[in-house]
Length: 115
Image: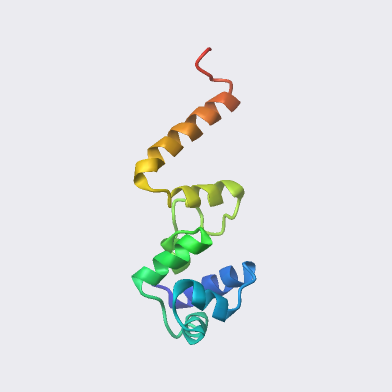
C-alpha cells in the first residue's frame, strides 16, 4: 500500500466535501488526531475504517489506497462516479439496477423491444 498516496487522496476527498479533520473523524468513529496521522502519512486506517471511508466518499477502497481500478482513479466523470456508487449497491439489488440501466441505455440507443 502506498501510504503517501493514501494521505494525498484522503486529504483531497475531505477538502472536496468541505469537512474538517474533526468532522471526518466523527463520521468514521475515530479521533481528529487519527485523521491528522493519515493525512501526514504517519498511519493508515484499518480495513473496517477504509470501507467506511470508501462508502462515505463514494469511491472504492482501491481508489483510497492509490491502486489502479478498471475505472481510472483520476476519472471523476459522472459515469465513473456512478459506476463506483453502483459497486456499493446490495448484491441482491444490483442485478435489478443493472437490468434497469441496460434497458435505459437500449432505449437511448433506439434498441427498444419494439424494433
